[in-house]
Image 1 (cartoon, rainbow, N blue to C red):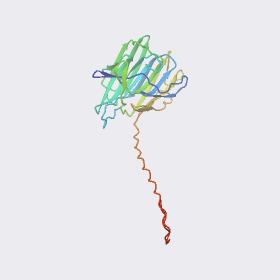
Image 2: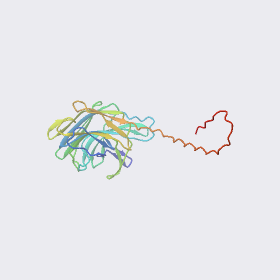
Image 3: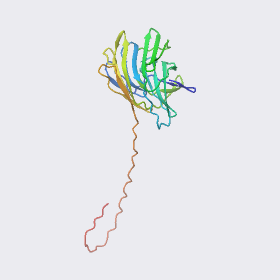
Image 4: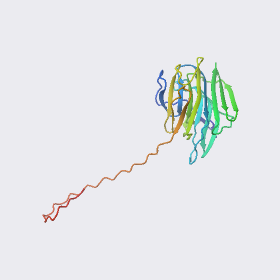
Length: 276
């Protein structure tokens, strides 16, 4: 999502562990990089969402870690490789929190957005498609900053829409990326989530499309989305701390008792029981 020296950090298309089932509302999938909700089963031309920028918990974190929050169109596995998205990030860089904004039109790299983002700011994002043109809008409602741009991506995917918290990747080239550790962002709430498909506007749970809940798990870290609100427009995603497993100490096997030689008969003042 941002350039670090000569390396780029990029949000990537969904990497699923299991395939989504078409036609089932609120199916659940596992991913190694996304957590949140996606809808599919139509042609999508607009997606909107709002969130409060999470504070990255960096105290005691020795290594850098990263988290991204965005809305987008396209990018589900099985698509043609396109993904149109815009959002923000909450990172821990050398033990210090860092916040930024960006947009990305896969397969091209991410582009920094000139907005000053702080933890606690309310962010509103929208991706809109008209023909081959994509309009990306990002608003910091708290500070009244607005960024909008229009572009024509080399690959356009309109087969899905998403509201996502992500463990991003560092890319060394267009086809060589390494997943980065997920920053502890606590909990983020997406609200006002809506999308447009074939002229119809609806929330995530609208019956005009299929909704999928996506849980993030793997070497980068874990995050889990909660159930949708009754109207299907709000939900939270929570960072899941790694479980610390206490090492189990193997008990040493007891030594076998040596067979005793038969003793000569002795007077038996009382019995003596040997415990093995």
